[in-house]
Image (cartoon, rainbow, N blue to C red):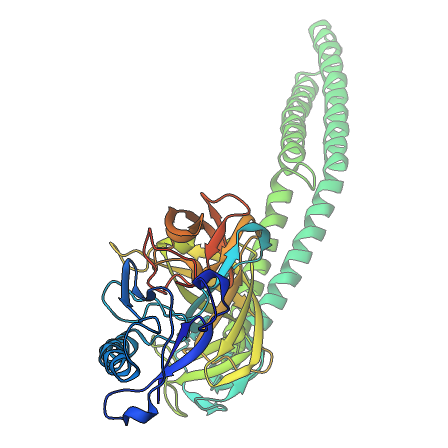
Length: 497
């Protein structure tokens, strides 16, 4: 096959006056009769790379004889053909030539893809992976010194809140509870009796004081009368009108009334003190007696309640909805101090996603997260970030984004790997294609500056996987949208020779 060249037809006066038409040249080894005459009025140049050109000289007609011209043209064109074949193999050239990288390998073929930097608003997302963790692991223990009557669940069973997991034997506790109930009832009755007695004593105290005072007054009146009679009898006895025996009898009676007065005075004092000491139902001796009786009754009732609580604890129930992940109790065994059940609450669950230090400032509490499970691309779960935890281990730069997600169907098992897509705050500014960056640092791009490639430094603000918002570029700048073409600064971006 041949290589297409362009030359003006014979009738053209100048190369610029003629339309370029393709002629064909065959390589060495063809018959002389198969050659064609090349008529040219200028030197033909073929671009082989930046700054490099290859040329050959065609001869005008009439200079040599036909055969001489053919031989000379044949030799010249055979050299050109060999050179063009090598150039085409190395540069992959086609019509009009092609570009090469500085290393000699093809850098890009055809037109160079470009994009115009322009204002844009994006909604970036952060894609990070992690694992599912249970909402909580509830470890159940029971220190009752009672044997186990029955165990109703096995590891892996799903349980609901309040479901009975196991039952301990409580025969002895039941007997103690009944005894405590009787004691509490008796003490309650005694407390009621104390209230009635105290009320009676308090109510009788004023009457007792009044009676004692009346007795004192009566004895005092009798004493006064006896003393008056004694004085009269002494006067009569001195005048000889009354015997000494009668006087003595009156004296004895006066002494008796004096003793009665002292006795009644003491009784009155005692009644007053008793009334003051007994007090009322709010304070005083009787109030204290009632309070003590009531405390005894309350203590007995508390003992009964304590035994009742122990009996209730003998029925071990699940505190949450979840899965039994550990069972360490069998019928006949005593619970002791060990963990007898572990129930894992799996709705909701946490997705603990691994984040780098650069992600910490981009994720905010309350951000929406879409979770997917490997192997189930169509299953999506929605969650919400509840916080960013500190470094995973001392000295590390890894952090954990904690996401709360509902797990109503139970598909998100603890330990399952997941991928989370976190919605980040939107960003606005000058947008360019993500593919325009020259390397993974996203700090530079190649722009078209008057037909020549130029390197421009930028700072990426955010990206959504397709468009990047950058600083350092003006809106309207033409950017080479494929930063991996190998185009270098200063390279001519215009096609053609």
